[in-house]
Amino acid sequence: MTPAINSPSTSAKLIASLIRSNSIGTLLVAGGDTSSLAIHHLQPHSIDYLGPLEAGVPVCAANFADGHQLPVIMKGDQMGSVTLFDSVCALTCQKEE
Image (cartoon, rainbow, N blue to C red; front, side, top):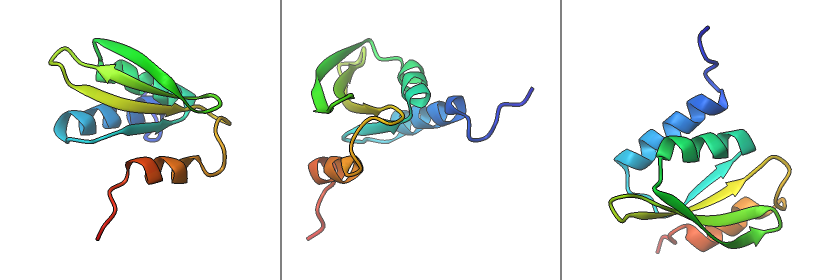
């Protein structure tokens, strides 16, 4: 059976591939299954819980064997407010001058 193009597993593999080939500041993953699979495919050495961004939306740090640390925000299903993505952008996006 061929996996669906838009399956959580396909999305997770794409996320892991992009993280390995690009330098990013923070990873926000939406979707409970996709979040879990993305972390699995990233294969961090450990994950530290840093605290909640909002109720049910944790901010973590994925720690890799090479010493690199990647902030990760995981949003599952109905978690987070309608302004969650705007809040994350305000915290993490670089402002153009």
